[in-house]
Length: 124
Length: 98
Figure 1: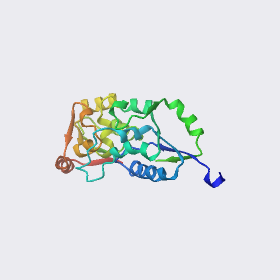
Figure 2: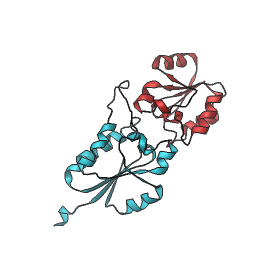
Figure 3: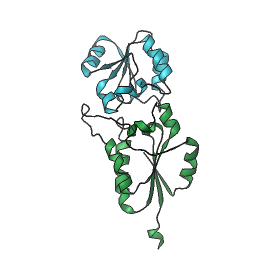
Figure 4: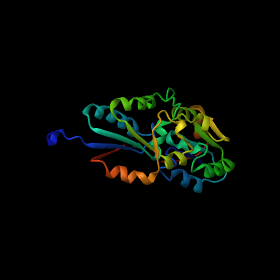
């Protein structure tokens, strides 16, 4: 395998709530696009990004796209390692049962180690 | 004075500053990511409950529904449509905690 074909470890680090800014939606689009490139992809949801995974979102009255259901296809796009930070859920009164997907719950103390293992970190 | 808060209480200090500054009885309007402050069981629940005791607290229903948190809204927070927002705006001076 040449250097150009080397598989990179790429992690999406998500920290934003779903509708107050474009970060969460744009981040999701980039994840789906990157899924086509056979890289080693993972995603972590911390801080307000755990709110993007909340079940039961209904944006019909806002007239903006409701994209939370799309998180369910991340696995099919090659993003099989998905983490959610326990402390971020707790601070927002949420548990994994409130989420549209069931990511691996990790303590915030593991985030640095996961970041260290990556070649590239993408912030959304 | 009507105080409006549209930022997440977890990533920004706007809600806390509003809580410190607003005079008793001043209405508080939560909209956009500001509505997350009205959720049960969060890190700002105690502060939110103090606010509810001292102020009329409103949250825009469309923003609450968009975020899927309607069933988690604290008792005492009044869900409000845009008409009610307009009424409050016409009845008060406004400070927006942007």
